[in-house]
Length: 569
Image (cartoon, rainbow, N blue to C red; front, side, top):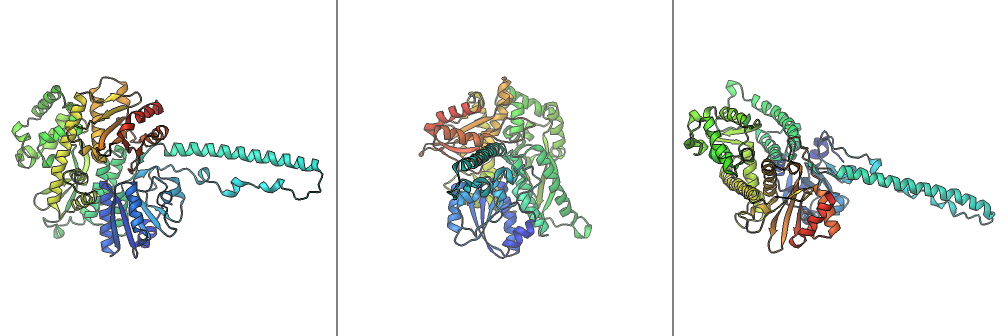
C-alpha cells in the first residue's frame, strides 16, 4: 500500500527498532541511503546496511537477515515485482520500499499489511483499480450446490427444469468470468507494458528529513545528486527534471537565506550550494576544456567528432570563440582568469551558431574551502566510476563503500580518485562509439538496431557493467542518429550486447527506446526480452532491477534475437 504520511507511517514506526537497509547499486540509491543514515544517526536508530546488485542478491540478503530483523527498508529495488512472492517472508516481516522503478507491481500496491510503498503519489502512476484486478473467492465460486437436490421423491420433470435454469446460470457465470479475466489481462498488459522511472529516491527521503525538520545542507546536496543521477543516466524526461530542479531550488534558497545577514556570514570552510546555469560538458572544471568537449556526448555527437570533418568543425568552433588552443588544452584550473571570467557566455554564443541551442542546463554547484568547487554531475560521474570500477579485484561490496565514501565532503581524495576514473570511462566510451560508427557495427535488424561488442574490443570489461553500458548505449544511439542518412533508422530503438563473463560464456544485453527530444523515456524491452526468452527457451538471467537489462548465454544469442525480431515486427 502507498504511505500517505511518511513521518507517521514510516519513521515513527522504525525509530525504536532495528532496521535492515537493503540498497541497490545506483547513485540515487546511495544518496537516499546517505540521507537516511544521517537521520538514523540523529535518532540513534540501529541499522545494518546491505548493498544488493540484483534479485538474487536481494533474496540472499533477506534470507541472511530475516531471523534478526522484522523491518526492512528497500531503496531503489523491490517495487516492480510481487515482493512477497519473490521473498516468501514470514507474516510479521514488514517492507518499506522507496523505489523509482515503475510500474509498481499491483500486488504490492494492494497489500495492506506487509508492503509499505514510500512513493510519491503525484507521479503519474495509473494503477488499475482493485476490482479490475482482484475478485473475491465467493464471487468466483458462485453457489454450485443448487442441483444437488436431496428431495429424491420429487418428479424427475420438475427437477430437470430446475436443472436447466441452474445450468444456464452457471454458463452465464462462466462467460462473465472469462470476459472479466480477458479484460484483466488486457488492463495488466497495458499497465505493465512499459518500464520507466519516477521521482528520485533521494528526493523522497530528503522530504522526510524536511518534514522532521532535521534537513541539513549535506542532505540537500545528496538529494540534488540523486536527481542529477537520473538526468545523467537519462532516466527521466527533461520536463520532469526541470520540475524537480525547481522544487530543490526552493530548498536551496531556504537554506541559503539563513546565512545571508552580515553578522551571520559563513566561514570559508562552510558549505555553500548555488543554483547554476552551467555547461553540458562532463567534468570540464577538472579536465581541460578541449578534452571535455571531445568526450561529452552532447558536443561530440553534434560535431560528429569521429570524422575528419567533425574534427575540423571543432577547430572552427574554438576559433569562433577566440580562445587560444594553448588555453583550451591546459587544465581548467590553470587557464587565465581573463579567459575564465565569461567563459560560459562565450561558449553559449558560439554554440548557438553551431546549432547547439541548449548547451547550458539548470543544475547546482557546491563550494567549500578555498578551492573546492564541484558540480552535481561531477559527483555523479565520479561515484558511478567508483561503483563500477574494474581496476582491481574489488568485490561489488568494496566498490559500494568507496562510492558511498566519495559522497562525503571529508573524503576529497576518494572523490578525486573517482573523477580520474570517470575521465578514463568517458574516454573509453567516446573511443568505442567512434570505432562502432566508423566500422559500421550498428546493424538494422528490422524493428530495432543492434550492436554487439566483440570480445577483443578495448575496455570491453568496463561495458560488462550496467551503468557504463547504459551510457555507451545512449551515446551510441545519439551518434548513430546524427551520422545515418536513413530516415527510418533514426526512429528505431537500440539493443546492445557485450561479453559479461568469458568463462561462463554469457553476454549482457540492454535495450533502450528510440532517441528523440520528446521521448517519454518509457522502455518496452523488459517485457519483450521475457517473451523472447520464453518462446525460444533461451538460457537467460533476469537478475537486474531494470527489466531491460538481462544476461544471456552466448550460444543462445542468435535464436533470442530472431525471436525478438519476430515479436517486435
